[in-house]
Image (cartoon, rainbow, N blue to C red; front, side):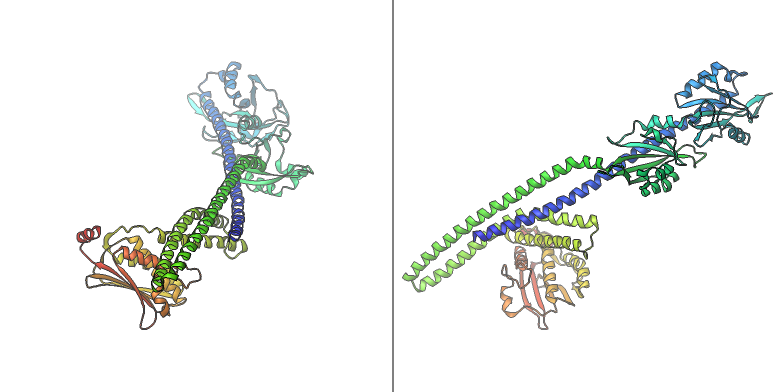
Length: 614
């Protein structure tokens, strides 16, 4: 016997270890998914912060040149274009990545300055476009913002630049004339991007890069890539050519002012570790409200292995917790097995001792001995039943929590991974969930039988319990082709009852009737007042109960069901008896079983409370 229990314990431990290991693996996958999602969100926040800084910086320059244009006509003579005036203005905007400023006259002549010193032609700037634009403006608040271009000649030859301009007006003979040319700033976009992208690194190996709407790189951790077109680079560089996914992201998302998070594979060109998966977050920086098509796209990227390093500690702690949990469970099971075997040996010894005593007494007393044996056997049955109840209650308490965890984790995996019950993995998980629910239901029945809760009697209309039973069972019964009806009087059925316990009794009786039908059929619940008592009957048109089973229907552990416990009707009987009522069963004249519940006299509210309280 001890060897048998030991083998069972080993199998239980192995099965539990497999379940815990599987749940641990699924938890690892879920944690990695959550951490990756949070890391992507952090990278997107970084990209949005850089984009916001770029937009704020460009807004500052637009406000600066607008304010300068408005104040231009208020300066006497050429004071604004004097070396002192130019130096004073340029010192303000030079710290904002403006490398030059100047004025385009209506005749397309240019006066340009850098650090207070005039620039000498050729300038290599898009001043002709600004002059043509300014001649077409009819308001002084218009803003011209050019695309990024590369200067071909002049002081800024081969540098990437942008032009920001606004028309200026002059006062002649007391009248304001708008078409007096335009003021312009020459902006260094590379320096502007560098200013804000350096302080926004979410991870140890993360970096940011910025491209304009045409795909030209304005900022990158690899300085040699600045000024080059990213799509052409991907087509020319061997380790980028394979990243078709990245090409699509750049072309279809980033170059169309898209926003989001994604991933791409990056070819490192290393035979030992050829491909690195990287996480990418990107968003647009809209530079001008008057020209929505002018934008830069900010991207923040980091290798996926950085996320894995972040969750390494979490996973280690998780497995430590799982291991400790298993050790605790194994220890509890081992202790329970030892105590169970010890209790079994002691009980067997006690039974043998009492049996020997009875055998000796049987030699002395013949007729009296038979009565004594019957009494002794009844005593043994009572003791065994009490011991089984105590052990069952203890085991129910110890097993329920791990059982709920297993069922809950399996159900969570099915829900999050959207497993279908028809595929192989879904079937396995469904078996775990269903068996866990069945065992949990069994434990609840054993607990209710061994440790019944006292009834909390409240006077009310018992029709509410009947109606709620119909609501709970109608849908599931109709799917089986079973109809359920209730016949109750219009007047209230005042009963002092515990709603939860009486609901349990009715649900148990209805479920028993449905299982007895095992197919289409009818179930009826009737309630009426008889001789100052309330009588509730539950009947069906099934095969009924075998005559030999009628007397033992309410006996504990007596059942004909394959997966039954034999406790449902026994618990129901005890609940009704706690309500000072009675429950009986008989077969109907036309077939089927009829369960009859009789509650005590239906008093008024105050009288019922006083009676049941006493």
